Length: 181
Image 1 (cartoon, rainbow, N blue to C red):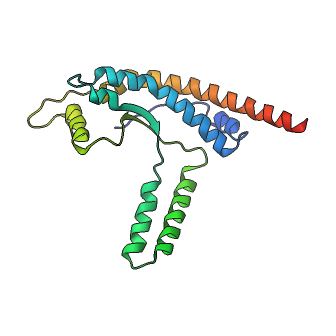
Image 2 (tube, one colour):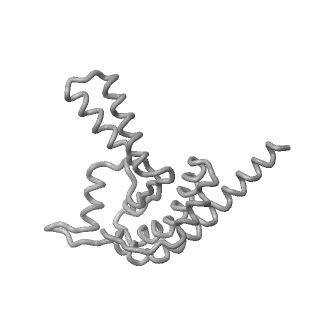
Image 3 (cartoon, rainbow, N blue to C red):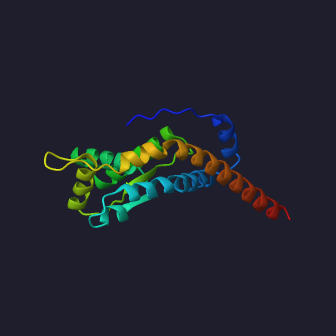
């Protein structure tokens, strides 16, 4: 799915984020994103089919690290090539560091949808509900939620990022003032 939007204030945001430690900045962005996505998740839950309610209950908002796959591939490559476990672990860590460097200090992965940990059959049922199959008519719930809420999501995200970064800067300033006294 391709989504195009205009982002104003990125330079100012980066200046504000640079006032914080990278971990604090990432945490502020992650909190803002999770808060901004929650209404879209609620909308998706309300649009999900209600046969058993399991699909609606499984829709969640969360954060997850995406660089694990990069590390796993590097590990498998070394092990498949006859390397030792120690070499494979080193390659995995190096691949993850390189991926993190490409993404930048403030990169955050967020997701909204049916959460992981469900059985294979439950996952397939959710996909069939959204897209249909040759036997079942589609009953989309994620795409309509996105389409209905995408503009409001961007406004909420802007507001939440502004608020979370301001709070983080003020907490950091208060900590610095306490250390001086």
